[in-house]
Amino acid sequence: MSARAAVLPVFVPHLGCEHACVFCNQRRISGQEKPASCEDVTDIIRKSASFLPPGGKRQLAFYGGSFTAIPIPEQEALLGAAQAAKARGEIDSIRLSTRPDAIDDTVLARLRRCGVETVELGAQSMDDEVLRLSGRGHTAEDVERASRLLKGAGFRLILQMMTGLPGAAAASDIETARKLIALRPDGVRIYPTVIVRDTALYDMWRAGRYREHTVEDAVELCAQILPLFEAAGIPVIRLGLNPTEELTAGAAVGGAYHPALGELVLSRILLHRAEALLDGIEPGSRVTLAVGRGRRSQMAGQHRENIRRLTENFSLAGLEIREDEHILGEIALVSIEK
Ligand code: SF4
Image 1 (cartoon, rainbow, N blue to C red):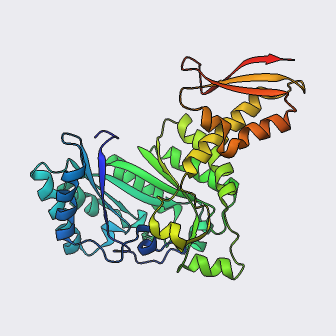
Image 2 (image 1 turned 90 degrees about the vertical axis):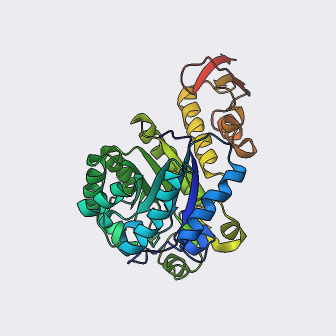
């Protein structure tokens, strides 16, 4: 299935969730109060026909709950509605997200029978203490076991991780990334922790029992994590919570919520690569850097922050950034003049 398939999300907020993960309030995150019904599934698919270009691939995705822990008749009814749409040629594939401890051979046999192609597992951390403090109710071993079962059974596997959870540190989050890489997923999503109103994490933060994972913390940490996945050839298909009206209007009260978090991280990676190129340069130099086509503003940074930092930290007399589609790698040093 092409990664470019249009995803039609169907939210089933908290369906099947036996544990209250401290950071989670799917109703606020998705902006949807009630889980979707079978009629909603059919409706969402039909409505998508009016705004999606004809001929493109479409994937129906059940998000926002622990799908494989929903009572079986409900699971089968929702998947049945999706399968019927697939049989009519209205969608091409089915995807769902669930918990690592809600995967076993029987579950996989059902998913295969119902035509599911991709499973997203909320791993969140590979540190058992972080998982415990976050109220996840599963262990890192559950993530490993479920990932092996899914890959072994031929499903596409997407793993989700979070940074900045209670008890986490930069080192443990980087270790989580390394352990997820070892499981060879087909893609990952990285969600730096956001403090959402009406969650246990919100109460912990207000009581001083949780230190906020700020946008800056997340940008700096993800600028280290993203290249690890890149180097392993594992696509990062999402970085940061999808901005929604509800989150922007006040449900996100703190933490790493920024509508362009992914861009900030890419910009920080370029900053660090430029710093490595300029290491040891003579103060007072005039420098020209080249980046790939369309990346000049990413290199300059938000409000030209990267230019300011590079100019100040290396005492540059001038810094020019050019776009050059022929450069090898992401960034190159074109010239240094005194
Ligand atoms: S993070 Fe996932 S498993 Fe936990 S409450 Fe939210 S939807 Fe349910």
